[in-house]
Length: 141
Image (cartoon, rainbow, N blue to C red; front, side, top):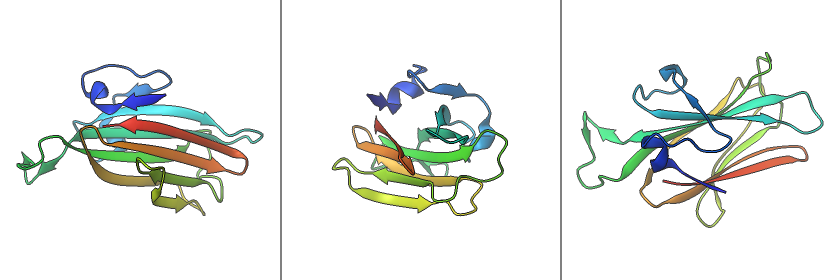
């Protein structure tokens, strides 16, 4: 199932995604933020996958040549009282062709976070993997 991020800006809730009202998770104070809880199969690890977006701003104004540009933040963090992510947990951002464009592997990380921009209609995916567990979420800006 593909999540349409622009519908989040319009207040539409996505299935399996909870709204986050606290602006403290990401830099964007007026960003729209959603969270999906993940339970890693056959382990006690519980994670939160957080996604936030807001219209891109450059020096206090919207990009003049790209009015449909969005700033996007993706973060994965532990939620079950653990201080760190599971060792070797992977977070990847995939492009429309399912090619990895960003990837990080947790060592003794408290979280993994990516920040990037997208334009209206652009597709991307987020993949979280750990051992035999793999989850891919698909989005369109």
